[in-house]
Image (cartoon, rainbow, N blue to C red):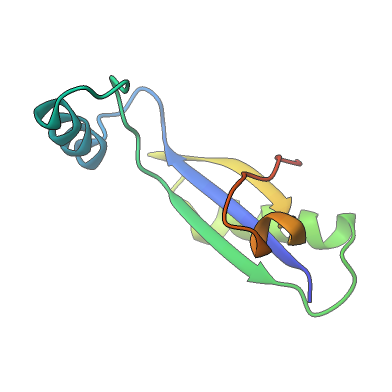
Length: 97
């Protein structure tokens, strides 16, 4: 069955305390190539029907009305999960709006 991935992140202008805590921990570990961390949410929605643009539009509407808080978060990705990436241990699928 097709799966749609919805990604939600805090708005860029807002403080991300969890991300800041992780960035601090990385700095304490030393020798980290990362200077900042932002933490968001990922939802996986299983589609009961065809994997088409209508399903993506329905997922985006759901993301904007229920899965995110538009005051403090942005929906940054709504895409079909790449089956090859899902079954492998490496890689990140691309984004489709």
